[in-house]
Image (tube, rainbow, N blue to C red; front, side, top):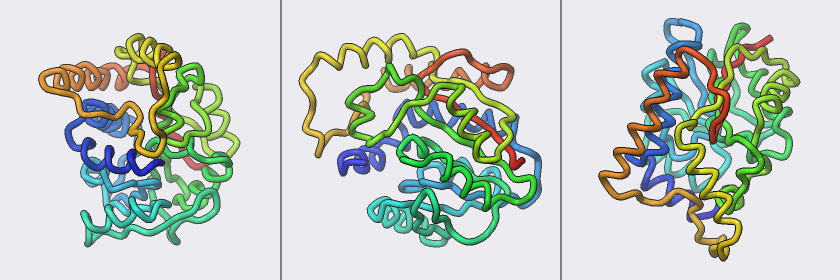
Length: 246
């Protein structure tokens, strides 16, 4: 990511509608599709500054792994008692095994996502699971993806293929951020004809949203948690998948 993205994430992820909406959808999917287990051990790969730690802590004991020295330092400062180690995907993750490995908007950054998923699989217990989120639909590519240094946006078929190729059995997959899809698609397509921002300071689409608009968008996005616990949504700005070690 660019420096602007790390700053934006750090400042906005606690209350911004996109982060909060994603957390609520992820929570519902995990409650529904993650195997019940006492004393669950979780590794959050690409944990950034630890924005998902509070949610994940409701499901078990959480460790973190992060490639960026900047984000790693921020996470350790915020969570000094938590195990947070550096990693370098596709090959290097902390030593040990976990019941659940999460990677929220991580593998789209990688040149070798299947190899990275194989490495995650190797750190799972015999019946361990992964929860993955990625951005969806290549035609939605915009300056936001450039600022985030993405390599791709996924289709449902491609995400399932990558997980399966890594030896993981997909048990649930769905698009999400569906209700806002038309507005996001229109904005992304319109942005292609606008002058590009300075990439060094670009924070992508993540900008502070004034209240009450932020609250309205938060409620709209997070309302999808009611749908994902019952069905798989057919389109959206993002994808979420749960898979088990095969």
